[in-house]
Amino acid sequence: MKTYSKFELQSFEDYFPKHKKTNLDSEEKILGAILLENNLIKQLLDKIHETFFTSKINKAIFKIIKNLSIEGKEVNLLAIKLGLNTLIKYPSNAFDGYLIKLVEDLSRADYKMLNENIDSVKRSYIYRTTKKKPFEIEIES
Image (tube, rainbow, N blue to C red; front, side, top):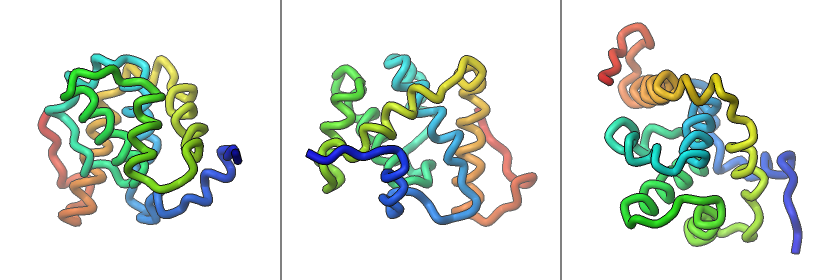
């Protein structure tokens, strides 16, 4: 069975946005924080939606996390991996490195700034859908 390094993961270019007004770092920090603290998703469901994510893989991961939470199931890397295998037709371990990266790259500072990352992702979404300038966008908490 073939394994994929984080460099090979970049070859899955369809799953990462080409749009310049994206906030991939913030998306990854949000997902990493949720993966580290499962109960966090319940607090965030009214603040963020999968359409806010620009990356197809991040949208899929968030959707899987949300569905697991709604169903009362544990949110963990294995459950997300199984969910990705049903949504995306790639080898079963294709996104393992990316999932681990989400958790490993999260610092305490990133975790503390979770609301700012959510606002950043929302602003990016609003910009993409309305073409409003960043200073014209008001975010409701």
